[in-house]
Structures are given as C-alpha cells and as structure tokens.
Length: 154
Image (cartoon, rainbow, N blue to C red; front, side, top):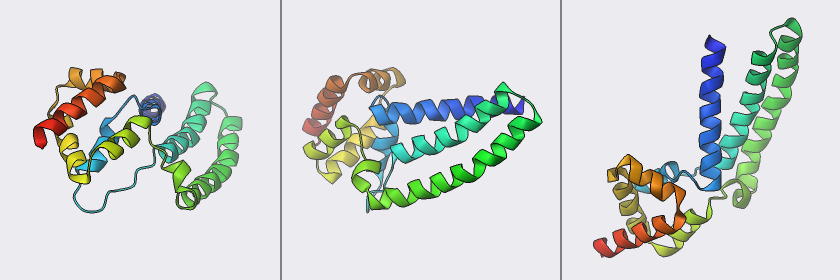
C-alpha cells in the first residue's frame, strides 16, 4: 500500500513539473516573483529530471516484487546519485539551459518591471481556481489578463 501511495505521489509531482516545463502550469513560477529582494532561482528542468530518476525505480518495484528487482534498484541507485550530482553541477555551469523557462515567463519578464511582476504574482493568488485553469491553458488570455493588471497598477 505504501508503494502505491509513493508511486501516485511521484507521478503527481512528475506530471506537475512536466506541465511547468511546457508552460501549462504557471503558479510555481509566478510565486518566484512574489518575493522581495533577490529573485530565487527555480529550475523546472532539474526538478523534472530528479523526479524521473526517482520515478523509474519506484515503477520497477511496482511491476515486479522479487529479489532481482531489489538488486536492480541497488545497482541503479549509485548511477542515479551520480547523475543527480552531475545535474546539480550543470545547473550553475549552464544556467541558460537549466533555468530555461517557458515562453510566457520570458514574455512577462520583458513586459513588466520587477515591482509589476510582483503585483501580477499577488493578483494571481486572488484569482479563482477555474480562472487560473483558463489562464494556464491559454497564453494569449494570460497575456490579456497581465495587460489588464499592469494597466490597473500604473
């Protein structure tokens, strides 16, 4: 039962990070704009790769319950930890790739100042859930909403 709960939660977070990478889930990236001071770095590609590294062994455990599967997991654990360390190092070596944000985020950074992005992020929190789903699904509607927010704060 614990393995099923673990695999469902890993699947949820993997799908969530995938949606962030392709630009269909805007909340976590907008939360980065809320903070005062230096903007925090968020790497959706690194998070997605780490979750996939963890998800594959859990999926193997679910498919076959045997000593061979356990041995295979132990063998896969060491290279996956090295891959994790390698990816963490590559984040700072190649920030253009690992901090690659969706197009809507680059557009927002180009359109608005830091203070305006912060206000857009706070307004995002006040939106109803269904409205957020609409803006997550359509970048054009999201841009129209951002323009409306920017007009009201100036």
